Length: 270
Image 1 (tube, rainbow, N blue to C red):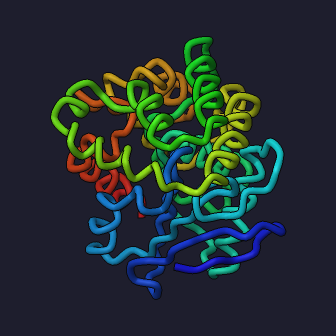
Image 2: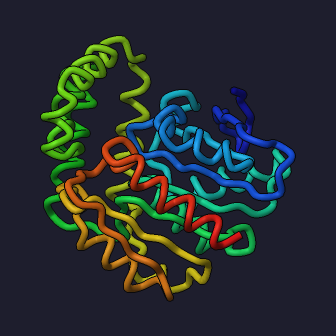
């Protein structure tokens, strides 16, 4: 666990796995998440000997939260600068939700640094329902009440079966949010505004030439499969997979199925 100043912003990052390995995997977080959110995926890639880079975007939990709306190009630039600092010239990228959108922007802007991308539950454009979901999060975050924030966003994030089967776990997570630092919510608001203003990439993603895997939970109501289908149809030769009985947080809800897909895809494209 370390911090680094890149593009004049202090970013939290973690370097895991075999740091001497030639093959590197960069994990890119969902908007409400942190590096710890990949706890189901990291051991699988560590076991296979990959170098693994994780970081919190500017505005996220453990990184600096400068004021103002950001951009996906800025996140991609931050990621590239961090890679350069750590001597990683080229990598496989795995991003969920907001992180998948950063992965697409990175692949457009820095194709020479990308071996493959896996995009999980992401979008390249918005509809009115998604806009209103995220606008509701802005209002919740402005109250800076952690438990209320968690329960308010929960129905749009997790699938029905996951909520039913893991309610005790979700209650613990809600209570843990009660102690979250207030600046977390300031950063979230900046990230939500960034998403609403800058996620439009549908007309550009045909520039992505690297091997691409697009995955979506079949029951994702926040960013439903129609958005993943748009991405898969626009990126040349992209692979597309739906995971049944799964909501938006595929990395938590169906980790075993997802991990098999991700690992197989990355190894195929070494």
